Image (cartoon, rainbow, N blue to C red; front, side, top):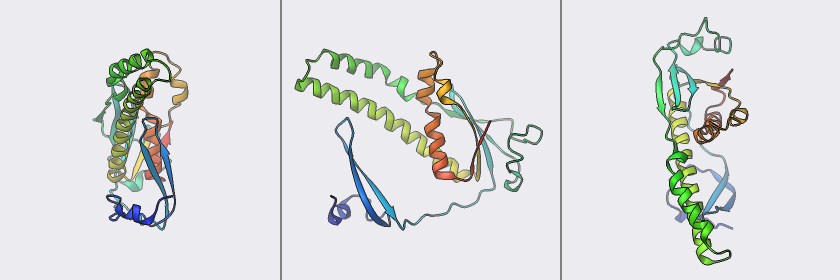
Length: 207
C-alpha cells in the first residue's frame, strides 16, 4: 500500500493535476522493474484550442504513414464528406512520417542475447542474469515504440480537429509471412488506439 508521504516525495507528483487518488496498482515487468498505475478522479483536463484543420492518414511500411491535410474548413468536413472521392479536396503532396523499425534495428542484439541465454545451465544464477538482459532489451524496444506513438498521436491531436484513418484488418494482414514482422513492428493498431483514446470523437475510421 502506498502512503501519502511516499507520493509527495515522488518527483513531479506535486506539480501534477492528478486529482483525488482512488487506488494504486503495482506491477512488475519481466525485466525486474516495478511500475505504479494510479486511478484518479476529479482530474483537471485542459481543452485544446480548435484549429479548423482536417487530416487523413495513410499507413505504410516503408514510411510509417503519409499525412494528407485538408484544404476545406472544418465545418465542411462531416461523415458524408469523408470517403467520397468526388468531394475530397486534400493536398496532393503528403507529409511522410518515418518508420523507425525499432524491432528490426534491435533484432541482431536480441538474437545474440537469446543465444547466450540458451547456453546457460537451467536454474543457475547466470541464466537468470541472461534472462533479465533479454527482457530488458525487449522492454526497451517496446518503450521506444510506445514513446514514438504517444508523442506522434498527441502532436496530431493538437494540430487537427478531425483525423480520418484507415480501418485496417491487421489480424488478416499479419497472416502474410513475408510482411508479418514488418507489420507487427509498425504497430498501427496501437497508434490508432492512442489516437482514439486522446481524440475521440474527432477520430474517424474510413474504409
